[in-house]
Amino acid sequence: MSMDKNYLKLRIFLFSLLILAVLFLIYKAVVPFGKITYTTNICDKSLFITQLKPKGRMDGKCQNIIIGDPVYFNLNTQRTFDSAKVMLKYKSSEKNSIIELGLLADQQKNYILKPVANKIINDLNWDKIEANNVALLQREKKFNSIEEFLNNLPDKNEIAVYKYDLPLVAEIQNYQSNGKITTIDKSLRGSYQIYTYIDNEELDWQFNFFDINEGEKADPITVNLYRDNQLIATENLADDGIIEATRVKTDVRNLNLRLSSLPAGIYKIAIVVGNDIITKQITTKQNIVSFINKIWLYENNNTELLTLYTDSSEINARTNSPAGLQKILINNEVLNINETYRQFTRASNFPISEIRFAKDGMVLIGDGVFSFSQKALYNPSYKKITKSTNIDDLNINYIITTYQPAEIIDGWKTQTIKFDLQGKWREDNNYGFIITVPGLSAEDDIDDYVEVGEIKVELEGRTLLEKFLNF
Image 1: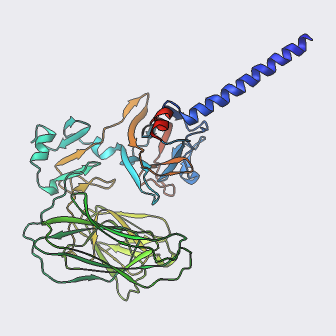
Image 2 (image 1 turned 135 degrees about the vertical axis):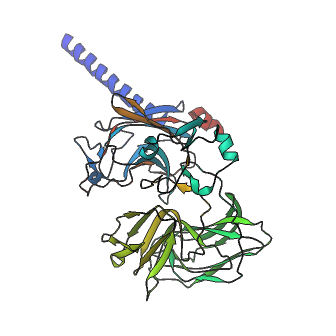
Image 3 (image 1 turned 90 degrees about the vertical axis):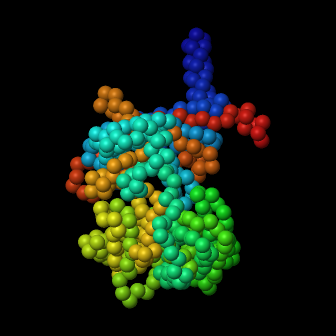
C-alpha cells in the first residue's frame, strides 16, 4: 500500500513538472507582459532561434563557424513585437573588412542591414568626434563638432559615409537641358530606381511594360516620384488579369509620368513591380538617367556589345540563366561569369568604370549608379564604404558613420543592434535575419571565418492587455 502511495506521489510530481514545463513554454511563446529574451549559443538547439543556414556555408562541430556569405537565421514568435535588440557574440579571422547583421523587411527579400564590424574604420588612426551615436572621423582635424561639419560640408569627393545618410547633392552646376528625347531600348526586368534632374523644364517620362507571366500572382505596376525622400506623385497600372503561370507574354502597355512647374533639383523615380514585369522601353526628355545600385537586363537580342557606366567602387555581377554565362569586361579587365546564381565581384578605384558584355540576363549591383551613357550618369549621393574601398586612393578626408566598434571580453566581441519590427515581414511566425560578410567564400582557399558564440534577442512590444484593449 505504501509503495502504491509513493508511486502515486511520483506520478503526481512528474505530471506537475510536465504541466509547469508546458506552462513555461506557453509563457515564452505568448509573452503576456510584452517583454522577453531568447538566447542560443548555436551548439544548443533553440525552440525560438533557428540554427544558421545554409549548412554549406557553415563549419565546426556545432555548425557555428561562418565560412561563406551570407547566412541566415529565423526568430520564431507566436505574436508580433515592436522592437528587437540583437546581441551577436563572435570571433573572426580579421581578414574580412565588413560584417553586417540584417532584418528581413519585406516579401521581396530586402534586408535592413546594420554594422557589426568595419575593419577599414577600425584601422584608421584619425581624429574622431562622437555625439548622439554618430561618429565623424577626420584625416586632419578641421571641425570641432559634427554639427559644424554638417553645416559646412566639404567637397563631396572628400567625404565617405557608412550607414549614415547625408542629404543628396541636389544641384548640378552649369546644368543645361538639351531638350532632346532620350530613348532606352534595353529591356529591364523587375523593380528599379532612377535618379534624374530637372531645371526649368517639364518632367516627362514614358515607360512601356509587358508581363511574362511566369509566376502565379497578380502583377500591378506602380511608378512613384520622390523629392527629398518625400512622395510627390504616383501612377499605377492594374494587373493584366492573368494570374496563372501561362508563360505567355502580354501586349505592351504604357504608363506616363508628366509634371510641370516643379522646382529644380534631383528627383528619384521608383518602379515598383514583380519580377514578371519587363520594362521594354523608357523614353524621357531628361538628360540625367542614372539607375540606383542595381540594374537587371532582360532579352534584348543584341547585335553588338552592351555598354554601361558606373561610379561604383565595387561592381557585382551575376546571371540566373545558363544562357547568360559569359566573360564581361570591366575597365578592359575580364570578369568570368561561369556559374549561375553566383555573384562575382570586381573592385574599382576609377571615378567612372566602363562595363561591356555581349549576352543578356545580367544582374549588375553596385554601391553607386549605372547608366547607358556617361553624360546621363550623375550620383547625388556620397561615396559609401564597402569591403573594397581604398580611402587613400579615393582621397577621402572625412568619414561620417553610425558604426560603433564592438566590445571585447575574454577574446569574444559583442555587438548589440536594435531593429524596429513594426510592419516588417513575417512568414510562418518567423522574423528573418541575415549575417553577411562580403567577400567571405567557402570555395576559396583563404582561411577566413566568423565564429558565432551566442545570439541573444531582447523583444519588446505591447502587453496582451494592451493588445486586447486596442482590439
